[in-house]
Length: 337
Ligand SMILES: [Zn+2]
Ligand SMILES: [Zn+2]
Image (cartoon, rainbow, N blue to C red):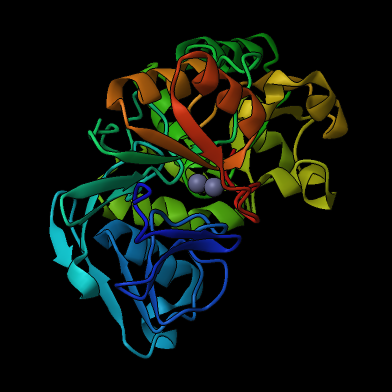
């Protein structure tokens, strides 16, 4: 029998027929097991949603999950196991990607399958680190699955940001960062680097930063940009969603140095497209070395690749005598690089 024949990859999610459950489905289903709160993985409207308590809080903030779900939401803390139908057990384990993010370990008849969701191996002050979990089938992402993607140490990127601020006291540094995860990690890393001045927020970042604070992540003093005179922001750091970097909103800031925190900033063309003056290569996804190292450490009999740049990773598996297949799943990108 082929490995994990009780799991069926579909274009819009991973289906578990004996349990009649889906992982990160792209459309409303009866029962969804959700890895984390990014909108490409977590959607509202499912009959029942099972996820970590923090992920459910994020989904509630964004979609009002409690209000829309008929069967409600089931919180599962890290390390706890839920018995599903058809003899399937599911356990949520830290993925190190954003607050609440999890890998899902599925077990049935002695067979073990791990779905990583999005993950990274670097330290992140806003969430617990990825847990290496031995299994028969590893279902992994490959967003940055090319050898050209090697993320630099985050300390170097934070130092660049602080240097730009220090040498331009009459300007402000405006950093584009995704509202869930990247923004809070950036702020927490600035604090870790010894920056304790207030950090200013675009209105769209405020609620999620508040949620992180409620979940015990210390982000220091955060203040809204709204209502401040232009001059007050000279020499300050402002965080906004990437979409606000070049829009009318940014004209209220004093000659901003436009920065963006993303793994894609490794690609010059992407930085140019967004008119980014100060590209910061900060990613919440595994880079090439983290992907290959994770496959080595987990050492599964088979590796299935959900989405991203799967060709190079498939080839790497082949060269290393590892059985692998690409699932070519759709719709799992963009919000969270
Ligand atoms: Zn994703
Ligand atoms: Zn994500």
